[in-house]
Amino acid sequence: MEIRQLLYFLEVAKQKNMTKAAEILHISQPALSKMVKGLEEELGMTLIIRSNKSSEVTDAGLIVMEYASKMLGLLDEMSITLEDMSNLQRGMIQIGIPPIAGSLFFPKVIAEFHKSYPNIKINITEYAAPRLTKNVLEGEIELGIAVLPIHGDDLEIVPIVSEIMKLVVQKNHPLASKEVVHLQELEHEEFIFFSEEFALHDIIWKQCISEGFVPNILFKSSQWDFMSEIVAANMGVTILPESICNRIDNEQIQILNLIPATPWNLAVVTKKDKYVSHAARMFIDFILKQKNEVFP
Image (cartoon, rainbow, N blue to C red; front, top):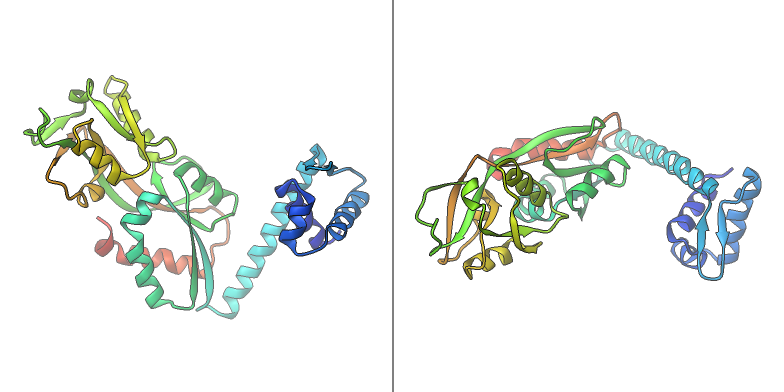
């Protein structure tokens, strides 16, 4: 059995199409088909059910996928380790960042890191919170910036941001004259919420439930600036992290303190017991050193 066989098989299983997999791998379809067929003959089992339109993975194929992914992951880890040993100033970091955290904090962090370590390449992908932690555990990304709390004994968690949420209302709203608003006072309000894929959706939802009411959600969005404009148009209220509130520049908006305090905390997460490249460790150390200047 060759590593190349496993690599090719995984691509076919991922694409569920022999032709598309062959294009991605830059080999001919007959050669790819022959490679997968050879793996099947060696294992004595059918891994792919072929048809004119698709290639479906069998139960045996799913098992091979699982072990092949682990084997190829170990090979990648070995390569990273050897690269670190030979050249500590070079490398690549695969980072996953939630959209909100990315726009608020990380342009400056990444720019400063690049100035200090110009030979380290940074590959950034935006992920919603649930998918981000899943991809860290599966090894697709080396480290992620996650919204706390997260659950997982397999994750190393390094806190970096700790702040609270604020209530955002239109300036003529009945609550706008108050300095502090209790969450229970919002029971009959119409809310502008983040979409379900954002951790903030669940954080605020659970906080409302803990105060004894189900929030009446009028509208959901993935864009905090659009949400604040909806509030400015007097179509509801919203709850946003303090860092976002500090960026709102609209005379029609009033930002109020909210009790009980609803935290919004971020952390760097990596997989426990998995090798973390020297470049990634330097990035984490860099964040912690810059913490007071960049983060609240």
